[in-house]
Picture (cartoon, rainbow, N blue to C red):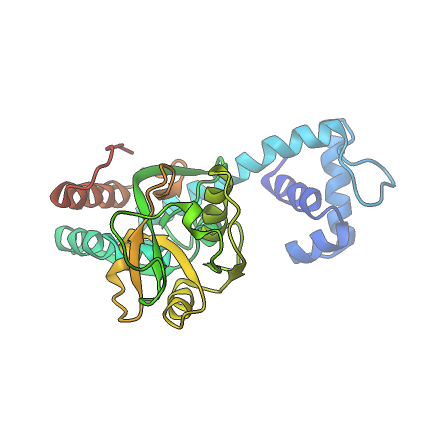
Length: 304
């Protein structure tokens, strides 16, 4: 049994169709069918139910799929890490969600570059979901995101929990007042959430917060990105819930008030390939903690 057998089988199992799987693998369908027959002969068991439409896996096929995916992930990790070790020029590609750019991320990257000028750093804005895909494909080395995932090929380190605030136009009835707001104060307001796609996203995190608090939000409008949400708030088209670091995005027609609900926080997660222990990642994590220490930001240190 060879790695191509695993790769071909996973494609067939995920697509549930030989034609789509062949297109995904950039091969013709007859050779793919022969490879699947060969794999079943090697294993001595049927992996695919004969004649099933749509394609269904046997119990043995489901078992094989569950173990084939992690093996392929390990191979991709090994390839990416070996390529990095073999490079004479050190590189670090960082994915980040837009809101982290208004927080400590610029200081973190600046400190890392000061301490390690030999490393060529590139930054790429992408959602957390896009980061996970880019990590597995080797397009980035680390991601700063806000959504957790259950992907076993990705390791996540919780850096901190960031408080959420409400963005409002200055003339709004809730714009002035002492103390913070509660979710119950927002139930009659048009709520702007972002990003619209891909999902799940920070939008789902905000909506889940209402659900956990047993509060039903007012009309919900999905917009493409953070900047559009802030522009619509400034235009008086609704309110938005954002991480407190977004307050650094100074806008004369937007004011912020903190949310006092006990679960009104958003995590910042440091994501990497599960077995990646490169010195660049270790040094970047050290830069994160040094910035947090200097600013007095509560966090728990975790090593690679």
